[in-house]
Amino acid sequence: MGLFNWFTQEVAIDLGTANTLIIHNDKVVVDEPSIVAFDRTTNKVIAIGRSAMQMEGKTHDNIKTVRPLRDGVIADFTAAEHLIRGMVKLVNNGKSWFFPSLRMVVCIPSGITEVEKRAVRDSAEIAGAKEVYLIHEPMAAAVGIGIDVEEPMGNMIIDIGGGTTEIAVIALSGIVCDQSIRVAGDNFDSDIVQYIRRQHNIMIGDRTAEKIKIEVGAALPELHEPPADFAVQGRDLMTGIPKQITVSYTEIAHCLDKSISKIEEAILKALEITPPELSADIYQTGIYLTGGGALLRGLDRRIQAKTKLPVHVAEDPLRAVVRGTGIALKNIGRFKFLMQS
Image (cartoon, rainbow, N blue to C red):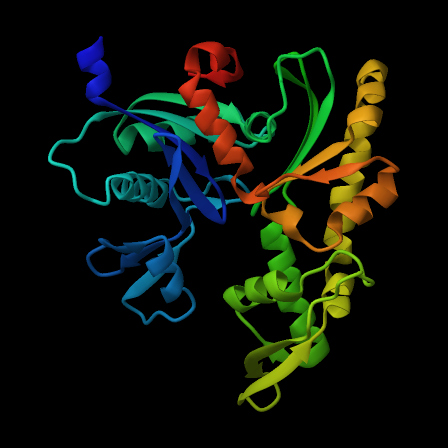
């Protein structure tokens, strides 16, 4: 058994729509964008992760960039397999004289179908995994932020990722009720693209929209510590000439309003279907926000105003899910019932 363990490499993967994170030996060893660049003529992989991200929107006819995941699930099976394989290679910095058998724990959205689960499992197995376990994202996030999921105590987790927003009430090591909606970070980016086009007559790409979201993104039009206005370059739709404008956080708060309202509706729906005893617990413990969307300025205050409940933003929300996945992998005997093999 000891020899088998020596030849087995254990990795915990948060296979996200926007970013893929991998934990190995209790450390986050990979944190790269979920994107693959292919040569169209040979169909070979040119780059993955950050180097492929730099090519996005700047490619010529011979190169195409693919995001294998859409709305939290695999949309391109081949690209997903290349992505997982390439990311796992990065665990050893690409230097390994032998390829150990892999034990993987991969987190998945709670609203995923059996077919979509199968796609994740198959991609992991083709990429070299001998054992694959799946864990739901809200459960992984709860474990990652230090909640004792085995307690008979209700906790509400909201994980706002790139493709999906997962809302779940957790108690006694299980998800009691959940809402999974396909409104998240990617929708915020497309809202910004459309707003800049409509309001300023300027065409921008998804990467620029993401930069705007990071620099001046906000959920409320009035903030205590407002960020400085941000300069945006794009193509003027009237003249076709590159142009620069400045946008403020109040404009972005206005354009993200509809998408955030959809998330608020889903939160209220999840609270409506929560059993009364767990509702009493949530009143005491509040709501926990994880995922990249939790970093949106003023979002916690907006949800707090809507639900009248305390809202806590997790420490390092971007890595909460992968940390929980790593803990589940390390204590696989204890947390096996949380996972599906």
